[in-house]
Amino acid sequence: MATIAPRPRLLLALRRPQPRRLLRACAATPRARRAPVPPQAARPRRVFLGLGATVIDQVARMASGGTSSRSFVAGARPRQGVSPAEQILKNVEWPDEFPFKPEDFSRFDESSDTLFYSVPRFVTHIDDQAIQALTEYYSEVLPPSNTPGVAILDMCSSWVSHYPPGYKQEKIVGMGMNEDELKRNSVLTEYVVQDLNVNPKLPFEDNTFDVITNVVSVDYLTKPIDVFKEMRRILKPAGVAIMSFSNRCFWTKAVSIWTSTGDVDHAWIVGAYFHYTGGFEPPQAVDISPNPGRTDPMYVVYSRKKVA
Image 1 (tube, helix red, strand yellow):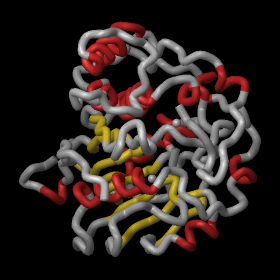
Image 2 (cartoon, helix red, strand yellow; image 1 turned 90 degrees about the horizontal axis):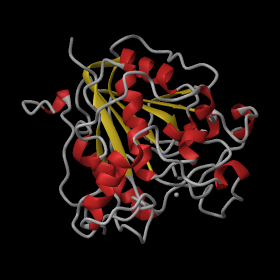
Image 3 (cartoon, helix red, strand yellow; image 1 turned 60 degrees about the vertical axis):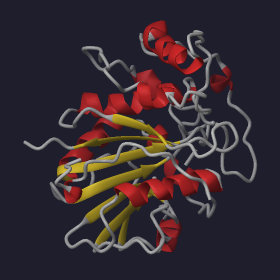
């Protein structure tokens, strides 16, 4: 059983007084076999968003004991225990304006997502060790099972949510693209089938959910700010949004900014979604990779809705 080193805990409103859902830049489709790499994904990793050497190299030097390298990969945790993915969102000097361009959210395959996901895939997209790490992380940060009044939304959900075994709440809603997959998910109390890239408007009242989770699917959002604004709207004050991701994905459906950057950049990208949406506390990144360099990496970027 993989052991996760102590890490920062989310300051859930339900856990005061300390107020405190699959995929190498994406390696493959489901684990049964690897997909060919699209031509656009074969281009060199770009120097990210004007951060250039300043931030990325600084983190690299921390990881390597002083040797700068722009091509380091965050999939393996440095020997000193400093994870570049965890450092990238500390003391960020965000650009004044949203740093992404429309083409950053283009994809190699712009065909219908509804058609792409029409056939159910009862597979997992990260390996067992990464799944275990995520489940253990959830066991630390989610409200205790059967807490009165708690509502959770598992966004971009499927046939499994990776919550702790036997986890229950009065309301756990799954939102995904395939009804057969959602029907199979035993943790859900209800579900909604919706393509967020077509309609990012979430069909829920304001201040409904205590927690929103999203497992290895944030990289598919073509309208991330619209979706994150909706997340902010439906979260209760001090509610938390937990975005987890790895380096595995459907290459052809992930957005360009994701497939052309690396793991550390991905943490920055998700953090930027929270920051430029507004109304969230400063996002934080956590590296929960169970066996760096030997199993799939696993990262979390989370933030809480500000209390007005």
